[in-house]
Length: 124
Image 1 (tube, helix red, strand yellow):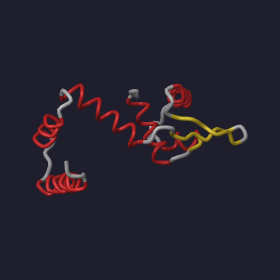
Image 2: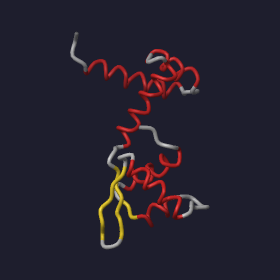
Image 3: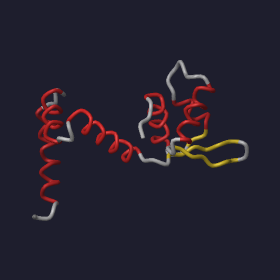
């Protein structure tokens, strides 16, 4: 399921904190901070979408993510791959390496990651 930019921003704070009371989430926003009702609306939508839940601590709610950042990002990247690159990892890799202005140092690091992944797979 796709999140709005505002929902992603709130999830980013929650992923970083792992668990947080409303006040802590509001404090994470830069100034000017969104209205309390706005953040409450985001939280309600995230709960409805199955991304967030909470524990009651007296009258307060402590929110926590139900979906990991890695899981969400993986689904998001698969959607980008499908929608923008025709499910072609080759097209994605070509675009990524040509259009992103990646330094030679970072390209070598990326090559090392790919080479290690290939080596770790069983021979077919």
